Image 1 (tube, one colour):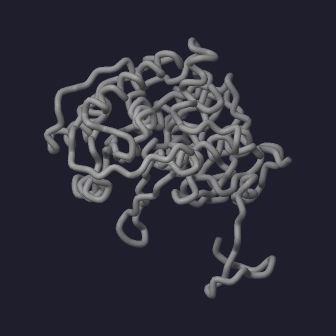
Image 2: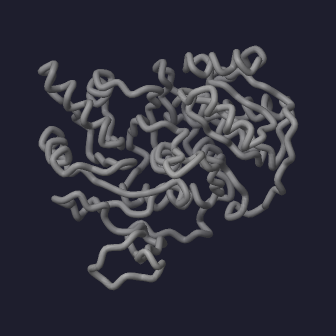
Length: 362
């Protein structure tokens, strides 16, 4: 069996079962370190999810409904995501920094039963909450949200199998037109979380830093769910700041994933301040989300003293399609091999497979 390959029958049916599992097995183990430094163990995260699910149920959310979560990375965002799963609702994750017209367009398209705003984490989320007339704060151990409740919506049928039940709807960037809502099932997301975690060798002792927005499929599947699937801990960063990242790396972070621009800004900060890069626990770094310039890759590797892994994915595939392997570091800008269980075709303009060695599109 290929490294990283999994038996699909081993996957849980719902994404919130990841939290339930570790809350039962290792309740006191740290799960989330929030933007304000608060640490939630797995038992506390489970309680936060339960409280958030009750709040959403009070807002009228039922199975098959959509819940629009206007957010930035935070424990309360994570709780809202898993709360929607617990109710068999779809989490529609939207970055709070989108313009009002973009939020409105997504809201009109997704037709949510309720909208949750992470207003204590994000000034933009608070402004959107005011604009929508959201109610007063709902407090949980994971944080607070303001909710617009009881919106007119038609629920979708609920499927018992995680292979067919939608967990999240992520909107594409709209590079070829208006953003499109991509429906990702629980199995879609859990497959990526499990396989990519095995290939990165994420374990319970790891400490991952979440720089990529949870509202992006890279941040959702390849960072957040991958980490929690392994029972590891994750530090949540609402907004990228190079100086804060440089400081965080000194505190035992073992896994760093980001887009190439984040690494570029970190190196610019180090060079401009003369600060020495200290990352004593770091063992794995990777880039994704945009093309990786080979010169930047080599500069990053010199600073970190580690191979910079690369990968390729897209929202429609619940993130990862291919990543480089830990045991086979590349000295080029290759995206590596397809994940075990993922088939890739390269076709020409006519839609037919191209011969080996020829240029095509996957």
